[in-house]
Length: 291
Image 1 (cartoon, rainbow, N blue to C red):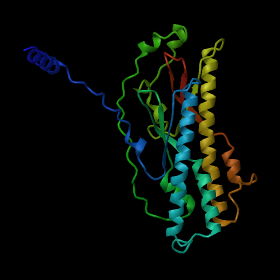
Image 2 (cartoon, one colour; image 1 turned 60 degrees about the horizontal axis):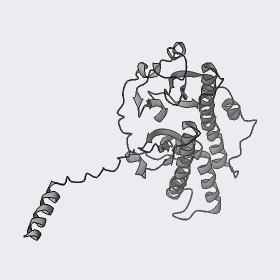
Image 3 (tube, helix red, strand yellow; image 1 turned 30 degrees about the horizontal axis):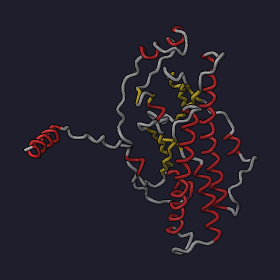
Image 4 (cartoon, rainbow, N blue to C red; image 1 turned 90 degrees about the horizontal axis):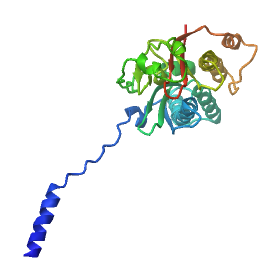
């Protein structure tokens, strides 16, 4: 009788025990695991030095990931062109492929980013296939094979959140008017610097003690302008280097006397398109675009 009663109790308790809900794994953007040609993905854990350093580490890893597919793509172009016979590639062509890969890798740029639940930052970089083919001097029909970027679930910037911040006095906070919507509590242009037809760059500056808001803003602007200027110079210089590699036996050396290089060294007009202050970390984000 005792055993029967015990079995009944066990049955009741087991039957009443709520089922265990397993937390589903996080859904990362599809591009994180995509093998699209001329795209690379990198990631970086939370960095005590701030978002700027974390993003830089993720971008560098993404470019490293892109390097392999880039070289494979250029190799396939050479194999299918009249420059080589079938699958045979001469040492001279191999040297050119390596030189091209190094030149074009510098042209890669961020097109998207994402923070996971642990605040690991994923960054997607890519190269323009039509531009790459043009610089290679090869006419091929470009078929769009890359995935479109996912639609972002954004929210409108709430000025009240900023006004509750202790980063700066109220009169200074009032002057910060962020125009962009927020995604993952950051402006959308942080994730996608190229917005609305603009070629842009983001500068991030930490708040330092005994430094004013204007000084912090100046640092952020300088960082953004420097990155955008470097990208533009790289694009111009790449055209010159590509010509040198195609038509000469050089490895892509840039001649300082060239008019192309002088053009690259000219300052490019830019505009501060938007600004945002993280109300928690007090990091200042500035979005700069080419005019």
